Image (cartoon, rainbow, N blue to C red):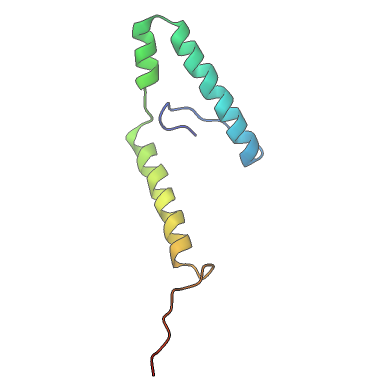
Length: 82
């Protein structure tokens, strides 16, 4: 999903989804510039609804917190001094 242009794709794998989204973004921008300039400004400044931004950054924060609080990475420890 591209929340900056409010575009989304669906695929069987993450790599395929990324490839399709890149192609869709390129086609979208090319189409926007082929239209008249007023229409291009509207298309390129279109954003996803605020709830999508909130959901995106909420999931991003949860993934970061999950990695931070997991035991997959070593915890910094200092040695006791005698």
